[in-house]
Each structure stands twice: as structure tokens, then as C-alpha cells.
Length: 380
Image (cartoon, rainbow, N blue to C red; front, top):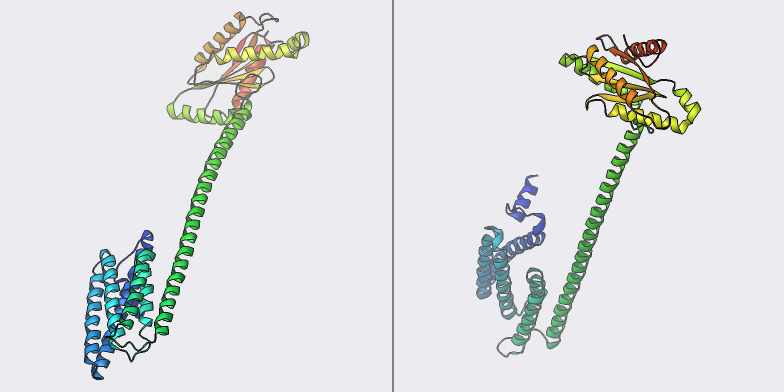
């Protein structure tokens, strides 16, 4: 673990890189590793050469080792030094390798050092500047090989072959860069398409969800609404009753229930037909809907029966509302059938009441009104 931590710290020098700095990160790691390795290798080779009495080249090795150490220190001082250090490294390596090329003719593999320089220049500075370095390196090798002042120890064929290899290396790197750019472009295009597709699908889902919500609300409205009269139907009344009973207990208010039934409605259907009967029901519903306050509930219980739940209404107020409705119904003409009437049953909710007991009591009051001659209001 300690070894891994040491290596990681050496490679990154404590620096962190964001996801957008991937190229900078790899360039930094490359410089950090190459310069560190070059400093150590140049120092060791220089010491060996000094021991072997090759003092000039050995001192050059040690000098460049110190230059590499200096570059390494500058690099590790901050990420902003990367470009300057990379340029300085290429120039230093070019001078160093040229010195070895000229001063170590007995080292037959020294041309391979320029391959490293071509690859490094391409990686650090890109294909355009890398190409100029390639041309400069080949020109340097050829110039000093052809000049009579230095004996490079290579034949013309060796220099020509090495130059071709460097050109081939450059074209391989260039091809790799093209492939990488195409892949990167394709990946960006794919990501853009995916983002566009995800955005489109998200919008479609939002629209679908909105439609589903609308349908859900519409179905809910249908499920709790009487389709003929537009009033609430019986399916929600128990929930409404429980809510209003709890509020009445909490706020110390009364709660009353009125049930009304259209008198002789069967004879209206039998005499005038069911279509006329439906119009009578709709007109009754309109009278009830426009005669109650906003917080009172009107619903069709079934057939020709209607319920009115009256929050904040005691027995006296419930009777007043029932009388007002009775008078309105009496004076409202119903085209084709004259003036139908209605019978009313009124009751007030007690603490012990459930909806069923309250409805049962109101229904008994309605039955009494029917028994006592219809078009009447009874309260229990």
C-alpha cells in the first residue's frame, strides 16, 4: 500500500485533474515519467562514461541530467508549467541526442534516440509541430553525416533507412491520431444524439404523464359525477360526510342532512316519457345547485332522490333552506309537465351518528312527508 501511494504521489505530484483535463493529465504524466527517467539514466550513464575516461561526453550526460532535474522541478511546481516544460524538454533532448550522435560514434544504436524524440514531439506538440521536428531531426542527422567534420560511423544507407523509419513512425502516429479523432468525433456525435434522444423521450414521457394525469382526473370526475344531472353521485358522500363531521366536531358547528324526492315522478315518466323525466331531473338538479352555498353539497342519491349535506347548519337553518327550496320548486315552471313538487326529510347529525344512521333518520322523515300528503317538510 505504501509503495502504491508513493508511486501515485510521484506520478501525479499531488495534483488533481478534472474530467475535462484528460489530455492535460496524460501529458503531465508523460513529462513527469520521461523527465524523471531521463535525469536518472543520463546521470548513471554519465558517471559510467567518466569512469571509462570519456570525460567530455560524461560531463555532457551529467549536465543534461541536471537540466532534466530542473525541468522536473519546474513541472512539479504547477500544471501551468506543462507547455513550457514540454517545449524545453524537446529542445533539451534534441541537443542531448545530437551530442551523443556526434560524440559517441562507437554507440551504434544512438540513432534510435531520435525515434523517441519524434514520438515525444508528436505527442506533446501535435502533428503540425511534430512534423517540423521530424524534418529538423532528419536534416540534422543528414547534415552532420555528410559534413566532413564528424565521423558518425553510419553508412549512407543507414541514415537513409533511419530517416524512412522516422517518417514511417510519424505516419503511424498520424494515422493513430486520425483514428482517435474520428472515434472521438463519432462518440461526441453519438452522445449528442443520445442526449437529443433522451431529451425527446423525456418530453414524450412528460406529455404522456400529463395526459395520463388528465385522464386520471377525468376518470375520477366521471366516477364521482352523475352523468345525467352533473351533480355528485353517491360514491363520494361517505368520505365527504366523515370530513365534515370531523370539522363540525373540531369547530363546534352543526351538520344537517336534507333528502328530497320528486313527488309522483313515476307518473311523469309514464305520462310524458323518460326523456321528459330526464329533463325534469336536470331542472331539479339546476335548482338545487344554484340554491345552496359554495360549501354545501348537493348530490343525486338515485332515481328521483337528492341529498343535500349542510355544514354549519342546525335544525332551524336546515328547515329554512328546505322551505326556500320548496318555494322555489313550487314557483318554477317545468315545460310540458307544469309545476312538480317535492317532499323533504330533514335531520341534524349527532355525535353518535354514522352516515348510515343519519341517512336512515332523514329517510324516515321523508317517508313521513310522503305519508302526510307530499309537498311537505318533516324533521326528525
